[in-house]
Length: 192
Image 1: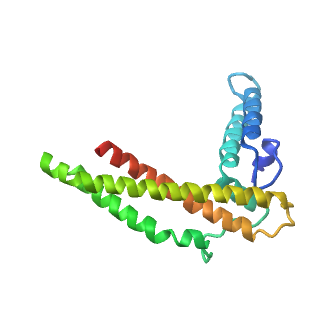
Image 2 (image 1 turned 90 degrees about the vertical axis):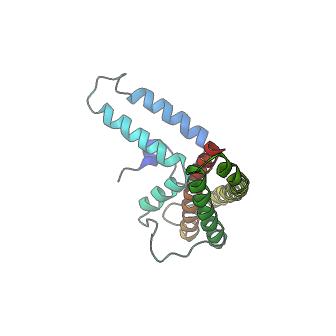
Image 3 (image 1 turned 180 degrees about the horizontal axis):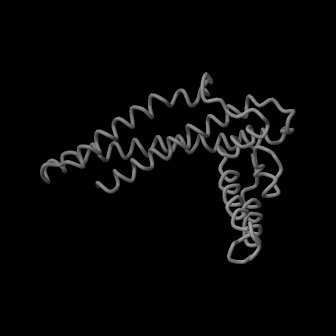
């Protein structure tokens, strides 16, 4: 397994300064860009640098990579879901069903009157989506803060990884839900 931290001259830790990471990435890609070099293997290096940057700039992917390097990749089965995420499951599930129903109604209106009758439902679903996305954004910020705090006491190979696993799960659910809801939100917006 390629150590993306080493590839981009970053310490193996949960939190990275994203601006510094971006600067190092740009510097290294300028040197390794296939158009700038005639040495064999530069295209492979350029591809690896891009992959490393994509992984390290996102907390979820960075944590997965870090845990994997530590020999303890995140488990996908028999894991306890963090309480703050568990409380959101019913709300997110209900919202997804609500959105699917409204989108179906809007996508197949039989006439203009039908479409106008669905509009209040559409606006209500859009507001509900905005509220849940706001909650998810707040949870994401809290997880980032927790990640920064954990980073202060992080010692590769020595620190208990339980909290790191829990943060990985939080980022996994939060980013997945945000992506799904933003996609539904775009569908609602196009229907307005």
